[in-house]
Length: 117
Image (cartoon, rainbow, N blue to C red; front, top):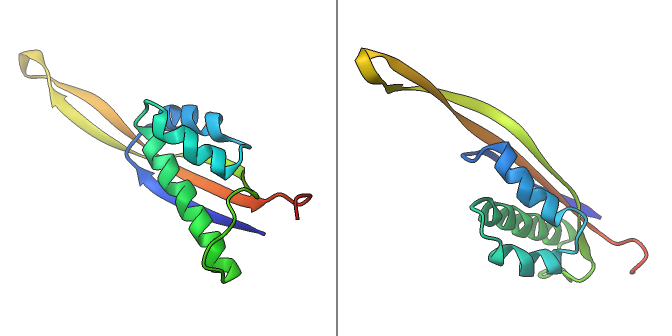
């Protein structure tokens, strides 16, 4: 059984979020819960929050109070690009300098190991 959790319109560029996604891809959820609090990147908090949400979604789906995290692993984690916020900043000599805020969509799929049942 698997469950999905999504965080959309996250105000962090996909390139920075993919660094964290590559660290946790394919690992056990229990291991991910221990690794992410010590990763010195802003995206680690976001990924941890979405992983916890996916575990909670699985518990709700199975109609259990608590799911055994030792059997769960990150089946899939995707970071897609969201919309871009285009803004302008004042520059010298009365000009405007454009800059872009990139947003991300994060999808985490948590599943149970089939052979460990």
